[in-house]
Picture 1: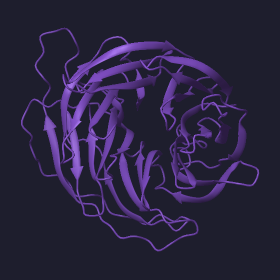
Picture 2: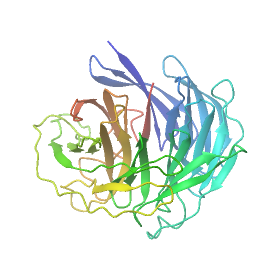
Picture 3: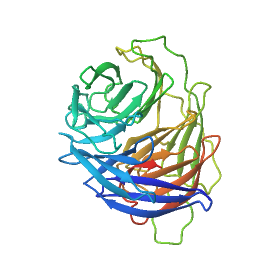
Length: 394
């Protein structure tokens, strides 16, 4: 029997620890730990002895915890971020946490003490600037995701339609070293990067773009293409309880020799046979100007083909599988919802994937197939399953 501990957080005042028994295929709650309001992003250090939470509240901050053998958490330090962070990156050297405030665009890095968990005073880096055409959402910079890539830190900026490439200066502050402009009004939310490739999920136009990501300075672009292959559509499991019905599967998969297959997930189930309707081809590729040598290679929609009446979509999370063969993207229905809920969080340890709806659907654990498909193993809707936005596998 193999048991996995999975930490979760979101728009709550507690962190949840779940146990996944892979032999029985069951997910259960281990414990909850009180914390500051809205720890909307959670990330562990490389040895999984400490975890760091971005507190999406006013005043915002970063809180650090030690992790007990049973998944229990003990708060160790908290710093004021002088803004509202919605994501952070714990760097692989274990010595630093980097974040950017959604409300004011301030990039901040925090040193981690020798104990691996205590945060030091923040170092202010670049103050991001810019805006976009969507009133109320793009009136200023709104950095939404922070990712370490080689010796850079990448930041997707929903407000300015930009992916910023950050490097550390001599004073230890992160400054802009390059930028990759996105389509006006697209609202880049989350990103993934690997081997000279950058994937950008856009919340406002529900699209996924694929770029080359050459070294700074620019290197020769790669060549690749997108090709949509199939879509999984599965119905919810029958239920005799009063629990909210399980949402059906909504995954789209692409494959290409140089491009990871892509799935968009709407808290799927796995009880009905797969169907393969014809999909519309990807949209036209319009090269986007940038100053760091990146080239746009593909762009396509992640919208479901069968939305309910009154639906309004906002792309949520982007997950690149550990083998870099598949991409999974979540879509939130922020309009008139139906039984499929509004999935936002998707995180994987390679063999399994866990997902949650921000306002409905509970927590669902899946087994990943070799073809990228997802088989639902269990669904948990009890204490600690509400309003989750992020998971960390230990």
